[in-house]
Image (tube, rainbow, N blue to C red; front, side):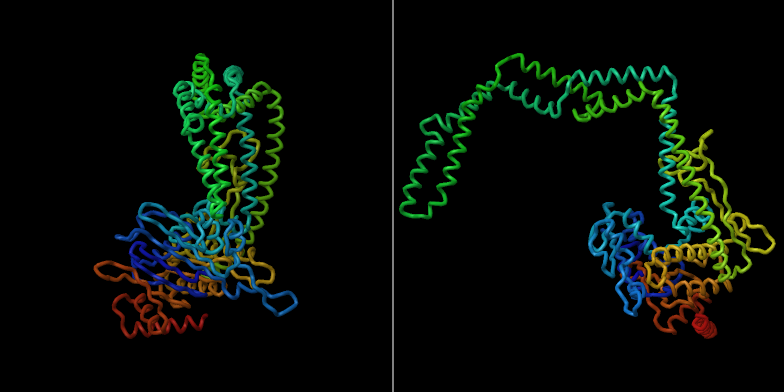
Length: 606
C-alpha cells in the first residue's frame, strides 16, 4: 500500500508529508485548495511527464517521495498443511529482478522523483536510478488511478478494448498478434516493391551495380585512411623528421656527453656507494632497466631515417588514395566501415532484384503462411475476448447493482475490425484495399460498451445515453472489476486474495449526489476492505465513510500561499468538516448534529 507521500516545492506546496493507512483514506477541502495536486504529485513519482513549470516560485527543484510498504496481510502466506505463516515476496520483487536493482525482497519500496529548474529530471527507486518507462511498468502493479478526465476516455473504443484486455489478462496475446501483423505488413510491403514496373527494376539494378563496382574497385581496407593520413604527414615533413631523429640519437648515444654515457657514470657511482650503504641496492635494477630502454630508443632513432622512403612519387600516391577515399565517403558513408556496409546492403538488394521472380514466389508462400498465422492468433484472441466480455458484463452489472443502478443492462458489443495500416505514431490510417486478412495490430475486434439505465430501453453507446453520474458509477464499477481481476491473477497460491493496487479516485463524485452518492460511498468502503483506497471528494455522503479523513486547505504564510493538510483524527473534527461540506461557511448546531448522525449511520452500515 502507499504508506507515505512527501512533497517539496511542488506548485503551492512548500513542504508536506502525509502518512496514509489501510482502508478508505479520504481528502476533502474547498475547491482549489490543492486536493488534486496531491494526486498529480503522486503521478509524477510514478513516472508521469515532468515539467519545470511545476516548481514552486523561488525554488530550484521539486522533490516527491512515495513510500510503498508491504502490508502484513499480503506479506505472509500459510505453509501447506500447517498454521505457520511464511514470508511472501513483495509484488515488486520480479520488477526489481527484471531491471537489475537491489532490494526487491525488502518490504518497502521508496520512489523519489526530482525535477530541476533547468529541465533535468531523474527517478530513483531505493536510491537507484531508473527510467520513467521502468517506473510506469511498476506503477500498474501498485496504483490504479481514476482521474477526472477518464469519463471522456471511457467513450473511446480503443480505451474500452484496453479495459477488456486488462480484465482478461490478454496483454501478451495482444502483443503476439501485433508482432504477427507487423510481419505480414513487412512481407506485403516487400511484395509491393517487387511488383513495381520492370523499367524501374532495371534502373535500380544499373545503379546498384555501379555503386558496388565503385566500392569494390577501390579495394578499401579497414582503418586505411588513418594509416595514410599518418604517412602523408611524415612524407610532407620528411627532411625535418630525419634531422630531428638524427639529433635525438646524437644526444642519447653518439655525443661525448650523451645521456647514455652520463647514465653509465651514475651507475658506476651507485655501484660504489652500495659497498658502503645497502640503501642504494633497490635503485640499481631500475637504473639498469632505464639504460636498456634508452639504448633501445637510441638504436631505433639511428635506423629510423633509413627506413623512410625517399621516393618523391609516394606522397602523390598517398594524396590520390586519400582523395579517392574522401570521394567515396561523401557518397556512401562517413567512415570506411560505413562504406563497406553500404556496399554489402547494395549486394543484397541487387541479389533480390536480379532474382526478383524467385523471391516473389517465395514471398507469396511466406505471405500466405503469415496471413494464416495472424488470422489464427487473432481469432483465438477474439474468442478469449468474447468469453472475458461475458464475465465482465456480469460482474459490472453486479457492481452497478450495489451502486443504485440495479435495473441497468450492460453489455459488450463486438464488431469485426477492418484491416488498417498502423502509422509509426500509433494512430491508424485508411483501410488497406483487398488485404487477405481482417483486422489490425490489435486483432480483428472492435468493441463498444453499451448501457441501458432504464428498463424497456435497448442498450446504447455510452455517449448517447449515460449521464455524468451514471458514467462516474460505471467507471467505478469497471475499475473495481478490472482491478480485482488483475489482483487475483497476481496473487500467489496460499496468499489471501487482495487487490494488487492502491485505488485512487480523484473526484469520483462528479455528476452525482444524494442517495447515489451514499451508495458510491458504501461501495468505496467495501472496496477498501480488500485494498487501500484514496479518494478526493466534495460530498459528505461519501466522506462520512472514511477510515482516515484528511482536510486540505490553503493558507497564507510569510506573504506566500501554501497548501496544508490536517488529519482529522477526532469525531468532533470530522463532524465539523462534514458540516462545512453540507452547508458551507454557515455552520449551525443543527448542521453539526446532522453531520454527527451521518458519521454514526456510516459506521453502522460499515
